Image (cartoon, rainbow over all chains, first blue to last red; front, top):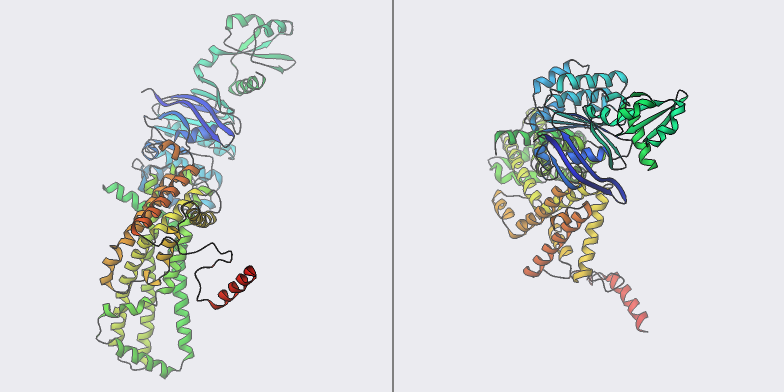
Length: 286
Length: 284
Length: 68
């Protein structure tokens, strides 16, 4: 099976609040997928649903299993890091390692200890005495020592300084990712992970607003810095987003051929951040 | 059960002991310390010769008697530990499926390949089977200290120590009785264990209030709907007699476990525990 | 049915409590356990405590007031 995650019309309500409103999602095996959305868009709910930590309605299959029925079996193949602070604060570092070693059949203690030895984390300290960055380092070291197919990261670098953030993603790419494993990262800081991603998903208000391979983006989305005299022409092609840029107007188009747009001005592929804003604004207006 | 599953379960138990070391070890250690200090303080208030006389009397009393026959005598000394274990168990059970949800670490625990059934079972085994081991070990340490002290007292006052040796053996024998007693009591109280776990897994806030409130509510509801009080009556019949909690003879263990009331209680407990296992699905 | 019970924490709690109550009431009926111990009819909560002198006296006073 080429997709590690297949989800159809996932729905989740918290009282009257609709957290997920018919989410369809497929994540290809071996991809690094970014789940991007503003706060409260449903990112965490989606990810928690994927690993069986949250009951949802709809069809869902992760690594060939239904997480709602077989969470504990699924967790042999999937690892999860949430925004810092989910490691139990009262445990010592060495105890966390002992625990994971005891309960996880695919954990390699030597590997974890080796990668921890490259950090400043002392083994006899309690989690609550570690800095946020160290807790994340520790969690990553644990997870990377587990032979899993899928790694789910929910805002993993939230609240970390730039040095930890950079190191986190470097380690992830160098030590974890091997082309077969799949990574799903949720974040609202788009710029940080833009270069890592091979697959992009935008979510807003519980709905998927964009789902595309990174390599397909240039074929679908085009940003044009339109010359002032061609504004009317550009408006006629139904841009999804227009903004002022350096005294000119920048138009973002969806599924309009580059041949057609060439005459309007300078063409390029929008950055993920710009595309994100464009898609979200589009949602708001129409 | 394969070897990995056993190791896994051991890991789960270890995590419980580490997290709740205050309830499992700290609390009984404090009780033991208090008893020792109180005893020695009382001893210093009594005239030395009177003390030696008392010791001589006890020594004669125990001399030559089977430790197992005399063990029940020490059951009374264990009562403070029983009460401590009882209170600690309630605190443990009502918090154990609630605390981790409150502090969010539940996301970590649930991200490991451990089923909800394993989690809940590990918590029951931890408090029912493992905690009393620590209590018994601490009582043993307390007896050991007391024994050393009595021996010194005996030697310095020329008391024959053979009877004291018998007394020590009886104290050790009582430890087995205490442990079995704790286990059997847990089986007897399994419905309460299940009830507390159910609300520990259910409540988003104040689990103890939920557990107590719904307990009373359900009793009233039964009276209201069926016009009967089987529930209240059943609970009352299981809690009114202190004899239900202590075992003084090894011979009575079998009938304590294999009687209708205990076995029916285990069935009711299992229903509530099953509820708690399913309730564990709802982590948010 | 299973979906309904496991829908959310409240339905699950309700289902568990219904089973709990059902088993106990059924068992009570089968074994002929005493169905009523506490009487609620009296607004002063007459807990069958007739041997309790003060309580009886107070109740008698109340009955006197009611009958007169």
